[in-house]
Length: 530
Image (cartoon, rainbow, N blue to C red; front, side):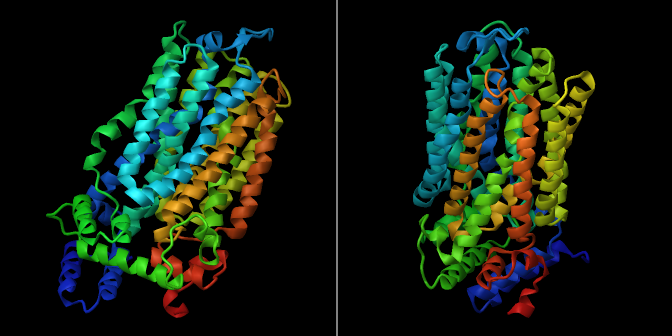
């Protein structure tokens, strides 16, 4: 792409506002302008709104913590002693949490997160994105309090996790939803993909805390990690009133003046950003979606499964579900426990978990580059195939016991971590933010997260029965199971996932309305099609 004079184009685009004969012309001109920007030009122009998007994505930080808390807590000897029962394994592990309780502890927050995801779509469309966020943070603080003061009671501990699961499900909708509605075209994929970066930041932080405290012999070894879950919701609760509301929601609810104020809050008053162009683009996209829907302006979960939105909804639901078909629970959630069962000490296992988390967190930077430069479809499709191969190798190496096979398992766990982070873990959030119609995103992403949390619960519930020494005792051989489910994800995404990179919501609306094959989205010239 030829270089452009950014300031001249901004000035010309602003001057066009005075000459525009209709809002549609203004919206079209702004869309054309956005497409001329390079990635770094977009960063320079939209840096302020990008920071607000990252603020919104802080909501998902605690999801990363909750996703590993069960696996890490059971690897803490003092936690097993206070909450578990004696179990003679013939090794240094003298206490365990039974498979039944571990299944509940691991999976209860995902069950209630399903409710949270459904509530999020409804509440966010009723009271707005930021007030829904404030409400969810208040609920989370109460749920974490129950965990912190459970005092050896697995029942109270799991009740606290159940309460906290509701805001967790809401956050997975609200953070990416806000990013998808506010991010400019050139930055949309990267900013939506940073949902995974925030989750990984939570995982990394929690892993570091457990590494420092996990081998301790006092209650602080597990109580301080519980308390860490208060930090982000408390911060959001104290500051969310400063957060500009989503202008898409404001336009959708007829608050045009408030939408313009929100756009000013996102981009600043004294900036060259064309605020009228942004507002016109939102208005025209929503108008187009109403037109394609035959004039209907309904927001409901039933609407997601009607002809106009069905395929888009199913794509998002399938891609979100694939995140936990891909071995996430095994390698990320229970990696440290696996290392202990392989014979490593608690301290060494926690160190390996910390190194793995630091590695996957750093891989996210590579994922940002790939999202900005490579199409979504090949990243997910071929990443799934390669990740499936890695999991099969881990399963094969786990059929025999020895130092060499242990090393092989560790190596391919890291290979899987790289492949997962640059494909499904990151790009799924980008796809989920781009595929739904603009006015249906809260409901569609809510349904996507219902599937994600159901799969998270399902894997967390059945995994201990496959993995635990007092149950199936498969240990690393569960790589065969997750290799097979990841391959299913490869087949599904190859068959049905369309390319959305570089397409505006209005352009995607046309492509879906015309019934274009998902495998041909990237090849269609809309001017020729029209």
